[in-house]
Image (cartoon, rainbow, N blue to C red):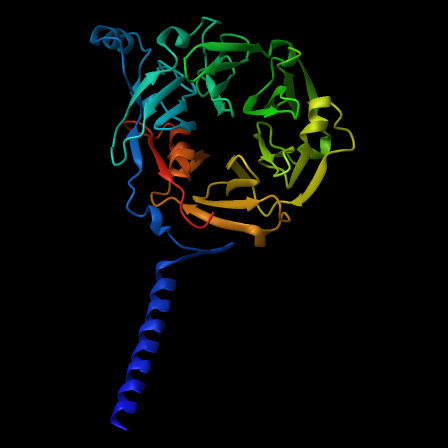
Length: 392
């Protein structure tokens, strides 16, 4: 009888402990409109890489002084908006939104827990010169392909937020990350107009190995397609339904999805419009888009597409919100399939989500970008490269 009472007490105690654990787990989780978000314990001890403004590795102290005195280097005007990772090296796009950005494409190394980092112009200082059309003027997006070739989109326009100046024609430049040599420069001059707003870049490989690049032109409601093998390009003008409800200066997001069978599909949407669309890459590459664009349905809010996992998943956040969600494009486009995977603890906004293959995880590049745009940044924009959290 006594032994039975002890056993019952132990079972009761275990039940109480289990209930308390469940309550604690719920208290530690944070609810969102798409479900329950729980911090990822696997990366809870990993500190983000953080820096303010931009510090550069100049050839010498006198060069740095010269850049500062001439207004070519103003640290607080530097902000990283897009990133790519290969091993321990991070490649960053630093658009020349304002004057004082000495280099628009840089690299640095991953040093967890640091509150600063030093940028090294990539591939060299000579390719960062404003006004030299053989050099980079303002890099707004970058992609590393399956062959470890770094592709960058250069709009050719500087001081975008002050007094925009078109220094050179827009172009896409391909560089080998192994050697740092420029492999190819694709001029987009004949495929754009003076009103073009080039924003995002995608690199795609056809089944026969042919390489294609896609560039979004928000102002002209078009996607620029360039066939590297044939060395020619064309514009695919999207139907008016794609831009229905656009603001005067809107953003045209594009994201390339890769299926298990090897096929690819381009997803696209304007920030202010209500619908998401897709088009199989085989149609895009052939320039035959009429009647083949799929309307995937109404967006629940203004979606900011921030990247993919280079597979079937698209990562996005809602305009002005710090939460990041993952949508597996193999599932229907519905809120029930949007899974919360990251929330900034500093209220910063993510501008890019990129794979970190060495660590088998996803990374997010985040900053107080809205403050930078409104010139309310003090010593400079606070930027972080962090681990994505949650079940993705």
